[in-house]
Length: 445
Ligand code: PHE
Image (cartoon, rainbow, N blue to C red; front, side):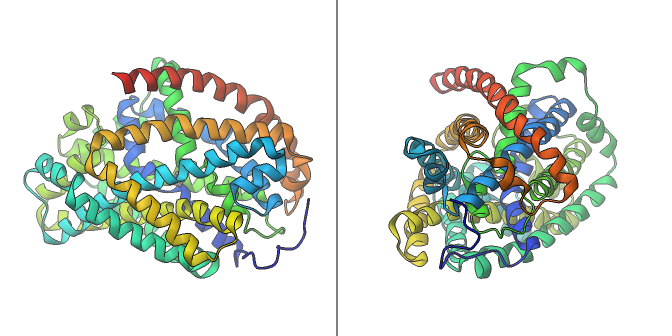
């Protein structure tokens, strides 16, 4: 059913900018800084970055545009949307697209909580024993406490709804985030020894480009970072006006997302190399960023505290706008499926995720496993499902994508659909087979 009007009572984003910033707010998150830097370090620097860019363009943009199309046509959160587009049998995909964000929200909020805790440290002063400090911050009562602060803030924003909550928060927070991040990159370029960081980050070898593990990691990182394959973009687009160009928006959001990750690298790697702490990042673990960076700032004294505050605030804010989008999926699903008011729905989904989050806040192993399962398996399943649904089962995706698009963009739509139909599923299946093997081996090991 194609409706030109919003079903009664469903909100619409007030402006194009508001939608783009909210979607970018979802995409730009801890994934761009925390996960991107440790993946880049693990994947041998520039090779990973290049592959990640390629995946973003070839696979990320088409899938995102398709998710926008599904969400806007169905005007519903994922469960209802996939059923409307594909039929009842697709319900399972819908549930997956709601489950994944809840899992991700639970542990993302814990990590964003660490960032907030370090921002508070920056005001007081960074610890001289960074590893011990991280052990303290990352697990147990302090982690639970900051996780709950983050969840409470997220719940509050989502409760206010699309225009007054999500859109407003994005319009205020995203420009702040971009500005601070660019400031940080400029500052990092003045560090002695920054070149070493840049050369690790920006030089590549052919071998690394062909390494299957790196290719696989770059692909799943692209999905996770773009927030596709997990119902978020479907949900946001269900509030989007028909005058908006979907492909254009997908390109802008993806570009913003890649740029932030790229700029974050321009901040992180010079700091790491300038201070000769590249050893630590080599033993890359979840904690890399949270151990080496505060260590660096601590050595810089007062200046380190100021810059450190900016750095961790950016991280916490990025985490917050992503958490908001993740909670919106659960909230919108409860509203659509059970027809209950937004406040109750937000509280139900939010408190649920807050409780689940206590587990990763108590154990880093659990957190790591949640990240692996959702980031490397569920997301890929979700994206595969979406590309098959959009490419093969959706009626006339072309017309939905063309609506609101400029003549120039319209010419590219057939290519985009081709990518969604053939390239994305083939690639996803290969990746899934590889991921499955690796993740299972790691989980058992
Ligand atoms: N895209 C976010 C990031 O890069 C993570 C995220 C995934 C957010 C899924 C929302 C939904 O950090």
